[in-house]
View 1 (cartoon, helix red, strand yellow):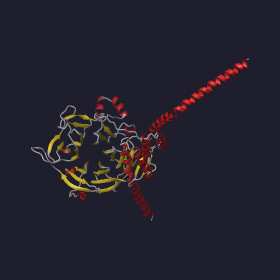
View 2 (cartoon, helix red, strand yellow):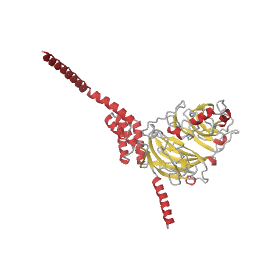
View 3 (tube, rainbow, N blue to C red):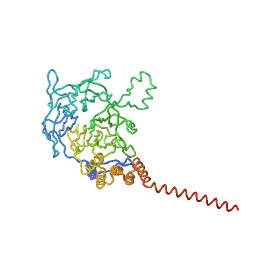
View 4 (cartoon, rainbow, N blue to C red):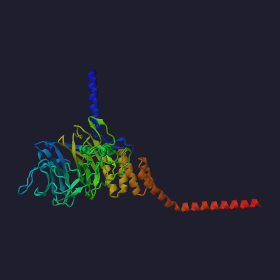
Length: 494
């Protein structure tokens, strides 16, 4: 009897945990505490090979790319790329399998463990990271071979390692930026004609201070056995609509993360420098786009978020996928956390090994490498309201933005960013006192101080006449009092 009761309690706990976690969206408040939120996204569909019209199951899929209404899944161990069409009614329809291309001469026309694909919007050329063939092939829109980007013949490139390109993006000029396995100097940058020019966006060298001291005190033989202090490798990348490259990495220590030394998500400019804006408010690291602010050690999962991939929406909201806990985090272009949801597991909306994330419009696609599945998320009404407000503010529709944020608060009255958004909209409308109230509610000290400065300036400008008149009256009264005192003193001396 006791055994049955124990089993019932355990099973009930598992069921309740699943119900509680599934669709469990949240954000962080000013104090760095989790604040539950209504769903920003919900699962639209989960597709496996059979749902895509494929006879052979996906095998170690490792890449995902969306172009217009086309979705590409890089099915690595099957040496192929699956092309699907995302229709207006949010269904995915199979188009074709790309497992070879057209070429002349001795060019190998099949793929060997491809891992990524990118389509340049300027001329619709394909760039495919054909990893185990040691190349990135460039094809025209009819899959005719143009050229290959191969191992650099340059003194700055370390020879002796197999060239294994894994990720690729290109700019409007057709320059390719390639991430290769075991290359820790950043992206390999190639011109449109395949010529290697330089490394781009190398990550800063990081090290543990105690290891640094020990290395200084060690003998030469001991130093040779120690690991060199070298830059870390990027794990994935995405080029946004303005031409900036977002890059993420997953190799860093916890202290680096807390001290904002790791910078797991970066926005690189033309010089390869990180220019990611991080103006989000909150204590406990709340202004850093590091995913979860607190992490424990449950079910064998420990440590902070490690980003496997990043995608950037047209409204400059960037979304990252955490391979540690299967979480999805969305941030706006100022570094404010918009939403977080997801987890590890086998139920709908959870992932076993999330490898890639992409978007089509506002809908999100997540590729699960171990689950061999593609999950489609569509924004809820609340999610659409948040996106609407973000976009309205960006194009200068401040009245509309403030009203939309008010609609957000009707759904979720504790959503911090709604107050911040309203405050910013009020500031643009020159309603500084209302802006102070909005910022003050969520302890946004930086913006509150800015609003207060404008309010003080406005108040002084409106009341400068009264202020001057008051000062004159005070001076007159003071002078009159001196004269009266003087007269009394003289009369007292007579």
